[in-house]
Length: 74
Image (cartoon, rainbow, N blue to C red; front, top):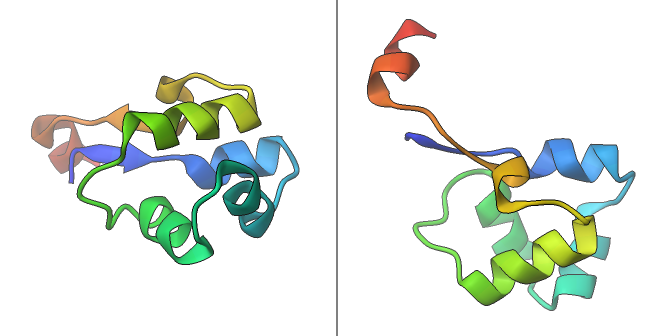
């Protein structure tokens, strides 16, 4: 999948656990897990905004686009 989710990296940098982020953002830990594993098909801008607010980061800090050409080089 060309969109890579680096949420675990940001959580580690902020020394925060997934369940704390889920509580502060107002989503279930199950939905956060789906997002973290890259299985989510979409994310609401309001959820993305809340995650960025809590983690004090930009959307590009937690999501990354890798083209299929680059992905095949890995």
